[in-house]
Length: 331
Image (cartoon, rainbow, N blue to C red; front, side, top):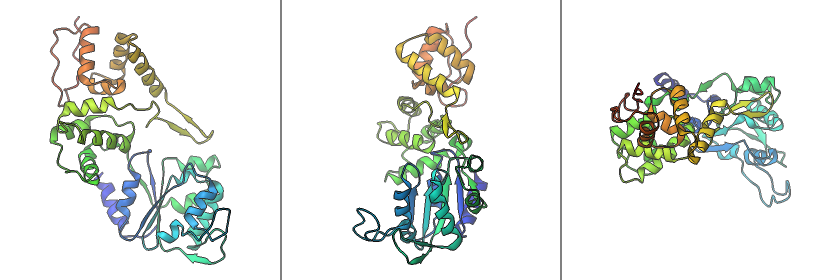
């Protein structure tokens, strides 16, 4: 992560186009703001909106250019003058918009919707995507010429599981952004947060930190584990793989299995078998098993003792690497 920070520090002093890649929720917007030095910062999502709406939001429009255009609208390119225009999820932009963006990047000028005057571009562009754009080019859902235009300075933002050592600093940042004391959580809570899986990446972490900050004991590891386990995670969150060749989303078997485990667990069915399979899949770590089932580590330990015949077997307390270890079954 230190190499990435040094690279970002160098990019801050430059003005060229930057492409950020990484899973949804990994913190690409936070990285984009890190690259921003001065002036306005325009954050424009390109997914889920009609091409005409996105075009008007980026380029602006003239009075009367379409029904409802009662007055001139300054677009993001104009509003971001002297600063940064961050276009999120460029991989989801319609092909028609991609062609116009390429013209803006090459010519450094644009025309408002319904206008004729050519206006200069005076902002830096930062793009982001969770998609593999090279595969999108092969699938003809992304223009190859635009790919080569934005690809040269590409920054891969790793998922939280690849940078768990950064979680304490990210937690302090999240607390500060909410106007809270960044040091209100002790080392015990921060170590606990760093040890957990984050299927929803930064959004998942932010949700847990928000709930933790309003709890009675935000510095307790047991509170961290309880809150983490209490927040439901959609089965496909952080695990869905974009199949760009077909345009569909493929959910890995592991996500479907764990969703089925949670449904069966909630109904009280075959808990012994569920625990045996999760121990075989995840190893002897109660915290990961608990997170998979959306249960607290204490509850899972109690079920293990009751259902798998571990009564009387000492279980180490929660806290360090061995804290969540499942004790061996009595022979």
